[in-house]
Image 1 (tube, helix red, strand yellow):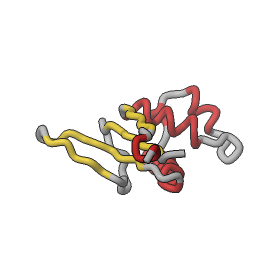
Image 2 (image 1 turned 45 degrees about the vertical axis):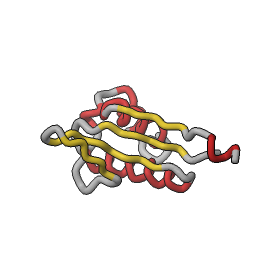
Image 3 (image 1 turned 180 degrees about the horizontal axis):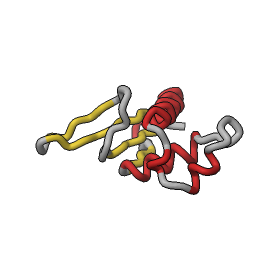
Image 4 (image 1 turned 90 degrees about the vertical axis):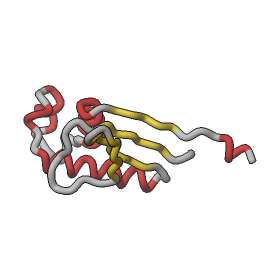
Length: 102
């Protein structure tokens, strides 16, 4: 019964903060010599395809640990949730990362 009352860890991030999280968590300078430059430069220099790749890594990592990664956007005063990204990086989404219980 104690397990039912445990709270899960949840983090909410705006688009810029989520991108910063992705760079810090999944940007591996050993795999790509450009990461060191990206960490200290504008996020606009990183290609949309790279952001989608990093997002997919984060989603897989969080899902494997029993959590979820959901993007939210406001369209015509309606809040829409998304559990994936197609080919283009979404603009102005909010991100919610729910981590599984340890």
